[in-house]
Amino acid sequence: MSGQNGGIKIGKWFQDSWHHYQEHKAQDKKLHQIIEQVVEFADPYIRQAKRYHNVLRDPIVGSMEYCTSIVDALPGPVELSRKGYHANPLVKSLFASMDELEEVIRISPEVQAFKDKGTEGNVTALLTMTSEEKIIFGHQQKGELIMRDVAQRAISFHDHRVVSIATDVNKTKDRIMHRGLEALATVAMENITTLRQRRAELREKRAYLKGARKILGGKNHMMEMFAAPGPGQREEYRKAVKKLAEVNLELDKVKEQIATPEHSLGFLEDIMNRPGDLLMLRTQSFHLNWKGVRVDDISESEGNDITLAEFSVGEELRRSAVLVTFSLGSNE
Image (cartoon, rainbow, N blue to C red):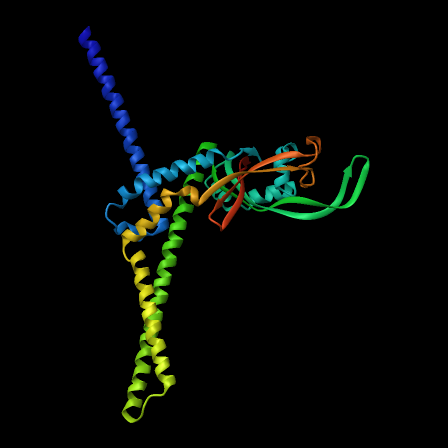
C-alpha cells in the first residue's frame, strides 16, 4: 500500500514538474517574440549584436511590468451605447452627440477589422482623444442673481480613436501593454535614426568641403606660379580647412555613438531601463455641468465628476483615455 502511495506521489510530482516546465517554456517563447517585436520597431540592425536577447531580457521585462501598472490604473470600462450616453455623464461629456459616438465607432479602422473577422457581441477597447479647454461666455447664476457674459472654462474632446479592441478587458489590457512597449521602442528608433541622419549629413558636408578645399588650394597654387595669392583667396582657403576640421571632429563623435549594432542596442536598452521617464500616466479630473463647463467651485448638484486618464509619451504625444465596452453588430 505504501508503495502505491509513493508511486502516486512520484507521478503527481512528475506531472506538476512537467506542467511547470511547459508553462516556463511558453513564457520564454512569448518573451522571445516580444523582444523580436521591440527590436523590429527600434532597429532590426540590433540583431547583429551579440547576445542581444540576453541584454534586453531584463529591461524589457521591467518595461512590461511598468506598462502593466499603467494599464491597471486606467478607468473603466464604461459602456458606449445610447443608454450609456444618456445615463453616464462621463460618456456624455466625451461626445457632442449620440451621432458622434456612433460615428467614432463606425469609422474606426480597428473596429472594422475586428468585424471583418466575423466578431459580434460585446467587446472592450481603449478610447483615446484630445481634450481642449477654452474660454466661453455665458450665463451663470449666483444666488438669486443671473449674471450674463461670464467667462467660463469649457472642456471638449475631439480626435477620438478606438484602439486595442478585444473580446474581453484582459485581452484589451494586454494589447495596450504591447502598445506601450512599441511606443518606447519608437522613441529608441527616433534617437537612432536622428543620429544616422546626422551622420549622413556630415558625410555629405565633408565631401563638399573636401572639394572646396581642393579647388581653393589649386587656385592658390596657380596664383603662386605667376603672382602672390590675394588675402581674400587665402582667407577662403583657411575657412574651408577650419570648417572641414570641425566637421570631421563632429563626425567622429557621431560615429562613436552609432557605428555598430551594439550602439543601437545600447540606445534601446537605455530606453527600456527607464520607461517612467518617457511614458507617463496621470489622473485627469473635471467637475462639469451638462454643457461641459467646469464648475469646480459649485456644489455637486450643479455638476458631475468626470475622471479620465491622461497619458503622454515624451513631449510629443498627450492623450486622454478611458477603457470602454460596446456591442458589435453584424456586417450583413
